[in-house]
Image (spheres, rainbow, N blue to C red):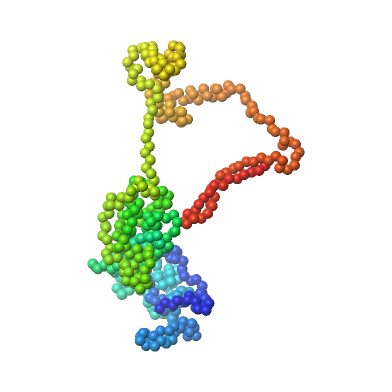
Length: 514
């Protein structure tokens, strides 16, 4: 039986008038750490732990309640009093834990006392041991001591050791006969709300059972959200709910599946070729952190139970709606094909970044040295190229050069062209102030250039720094702030305001008056 002990009447509730008592519950993280410490893990449960301990007779009027006589709704109501501690009363955990510790006071086996006082979290006992025999012994001796001293039943044993499980009585083993457990989560959105609902599919000996686990709805934001964005938020909401359910259930989940009726969202999740803007990119990343792409599939809107959570529905229809009863069938999609969910109209989708095509053009510096082989001598090469250059300059009506300048400049062009063809990569690296490539023939010239630079620096004359004359007004007496100097420094990025789920930053500058 569960009491709503926090219900308020005339400004008071039962829990507000009761002392909660000390926190005797072991730290959950510590219990789990010790549970994972050794090779053989065991768990057990105390049957109806709060009901194992009685309330003093003078205190039972605090837990009075009204119910039908003989539990028959056709008979009249009468007053009852609880004789044992009950759930939802604030002192119950402290009282039950204290009484449980009293059960293993001396004389008692040290290892049993340690197991009960250190490795119980309320009514669940978790621990681990090095051998199968040690784990089995602690379960059986703890069960016997609690039964003999206070008639407390310790049962629902489970272990990762088959030897331990086979040695336990069948009636004391944990009942978990399901062959396969699956979570199926549906997502949907409208301009009013976003919604997600989760069901568990249990398969046992050829029989399938589908049951409602949990569902939630949230009001949709009013501004700046398109329907595809809201559908994406619903998909993220679905993964968060499914992760919470998986962490809270004690049973092993063999598979998780997600459904949405938005092909736009499925295109975002299955996309491998395009990039998104920040809003969509962040949420797609968070969705795929809690799920895998192949776990997502399409469901028609009229078969999506999450649709119920995005719109109004009369209360008398909720019990028979698909929200609680679940979908009629769970789709079979073991084999997913990403080509089924392409991006819809990616060129016109404002959430997808535009594709930018970059074309690289390699420009050849100087002349093509292959033409040099057509000339038999150096002089004939330079004369021929000079004649060609002179004709081009005349065609372009440029100023004529003397034969000497034309000949000398043509020699430089030919030499540079040959050098670039042989050492083009090294020349470009030297222009960027980088060392030449490893194995380059120019490496042997590096030390010569270094010595030359050092000699030039050593032979330079001593120079003095030229400083401008200071203005005369700082040296004269004058009233404060007659002359003011201003300087700025920064910028820094600071948090300007908190938005929905994000932080907006702004730049700030400092101004110094001297």
